[in-house]
Image (cartoon, rainbow, N blue to C red; front, side):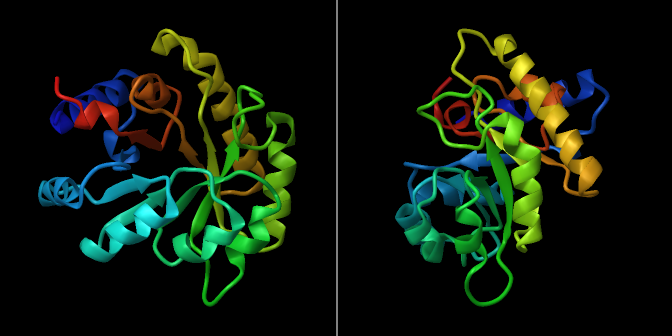
Length: 216
């Protein structure tokens, strides 16, 4: 594992742009990892873990400490909301207007969510169109969805720096949303290959798996 390396890189990226690394939450994407592996990271003080499949999330949550902050980072079908909703702290992938009513349906307050934006306008990816993001964000807040901000997965590129324009555009969209909805400033961008650029562009969440679990 290379958790320390990832933490060092987060600290360095934040310092380069005058940010505190305390303002960036590392979500360890633990999909496909064993409960024992997650326990080891938990023992080292990590509390934020991300899963992208409802049943895998539910199975792991049943076997792990209750103070873990679970993040759901994958596409969510409406019929799986009942599995995910009671477990997670934050849904990163509210990717369509129609999912909003399903997310808030049920007992108690639904956890916070992020509006997923298809920043590259890729037909194979989930998320709302960038031009529609501010309007859809407004519509979801109006029906009672606790939206904390926005999220995106940019197009695959050959080198991390190529993601900067997309991350800068997400930062712009985040600012537009926050101007209309003060306090809703969460920005979930950046994964293993580009999280340092994402932090430089204002990410408050980075979702990293491979860089932590691969042997370096």
